[in-house]
Length: 245
Image (cartoon, rainbow, N blue to C red; front, top):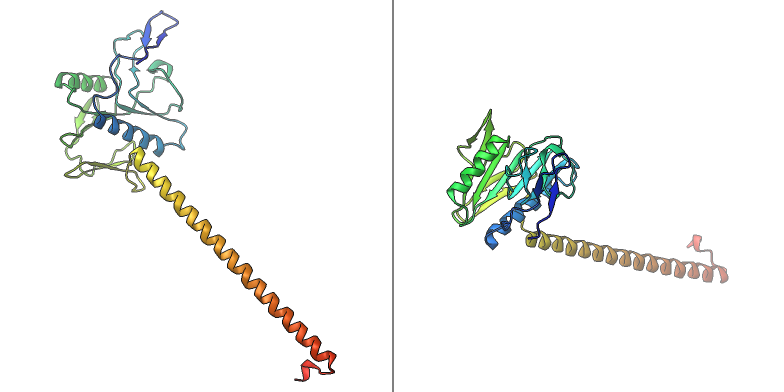
């Protein structure tokens, strides 16, 4: 990972854009990080003031570059979308990331997770969710005053900020959007888009076939009308009034 440095213009303090750690320890952890981040991004795509990031260093205090964490996913309400090298809170109207997610891997040690909990608690996170995809265990904490208190039952829990619902099954965690749609992996999203494209193409083909049938019907009616007019003219040419028949 390339490390870029940002310097505080007032004090020449360097705030690295990378902590030198990998985004994920394995494919399962990476897939979950991407799935949660991208689906939340999609959920708030129409809201210009919701910033969503994955594995981005968050510096809550100016002048303290060692006080930082890189949540697997963080959501900030009240800040515009856009690229950032890091989230320097004092440059972001001092708005704290309200929701953070951590996806566990075998490399997550108890001490490291305890440090993250204390950090998020100290610096004002409102909702903190921890998912272990190996053991299918979901932990949630919700701010109450100065503390992040554990949520007693996460099965069926709805995030106050995000509006998403968590459902635990024997095999996995399922996350639902407020409209009831399930969070999908990028591959599933692509498959869904392909299905929609195929349905749209089938609808287009059916509409084209209907148009062609309508044109054929109109052509047949016009031919019948022409034959009828020709017959009427033929009768009149023989001195027969068709209206007297």
